[in-house]
Image 1: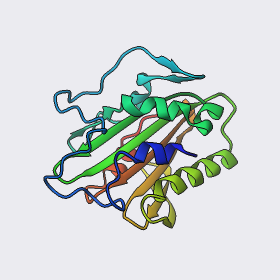
Image 2: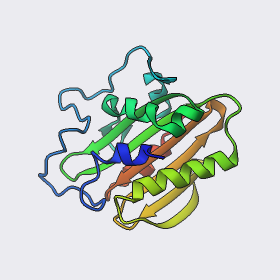
Image 3: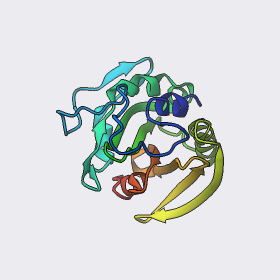
Length: 196
């Protein structure tokens, strides 16, 4: 899956470590300093996958006091990913970031087509997403499954400190994958606030 590599390429600095204090957020990240709330709007199409901002309703509005913002710059890349376009009906991406520390959580929210989800698909999704994400952060070093807010969460750790979180929201056919870096554990807190 190219999705994780494409989406993380403009966020991860070095080997997945937090950006030092005072380091500006890369210009290609969707961090609008004058727009604290996620932009909304009607769904749009990118190929056969709908880019649907309403999927942000499954995410918390804030994480640890930081706004969760839509990332329209990466929506099209997510929609064009072969795995997403093969199995997904709609997608949206979002980012929560603490500019002074560089801590961030980056979420890809995909509504799968009816009847597509299987445990095999979910396993393959996690493995390829994590392989892509961790390829820029030293490779996967630990795989774990835990419960957060009464949901099963798959958490993988990369050598460079980046973590990925995967959650299946079965009632809504929503697959959420999050990549995160930093001491504030924004990925974990984002997953904690998911809504099915």
